[in-house]
Length: 200
Image (cartoon, rainbow, N blue to C red):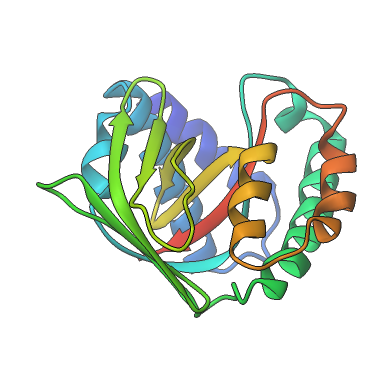
């Protein structure tokens, strides 16, 4: 773990001097969180998940492949985020207009996304980071939606397979056409998950 932190610090130092001290602290905190989460087999995320998180923007996660290390990976992520921002806005999901609360003892969750409030229960499998949301029946019958949850520093990324995310956001009021560019960009890649980013 110490080697990973020293390596991360070295990369930051080589990355240039324009970053502020705060940026460096946050980057180190994220690296330390990721290392600790890996060392605890996902338990760190499980314990840190409980509480209220505030929506900050779309989230994208590349699972189990080399895409994250490709030069094009960052460009792809940026392009997808821009398209998701448009689709989310149509459903009223904007930064500052959404929260997600995970219960600590009762495994309940409540989500406010735009003008919609959703609730239900959740299950989290620490080693795989799979979080399954079991939505309560109401106006929107979404059933159970499996996704992934990752915590890095003070940020939570909650992501789902593209098809399931389209179902959820379409049910909230966005039209499928707004996802067309994003899904086209992602169609040639396997194990790409999209969703939401939150901060505490």
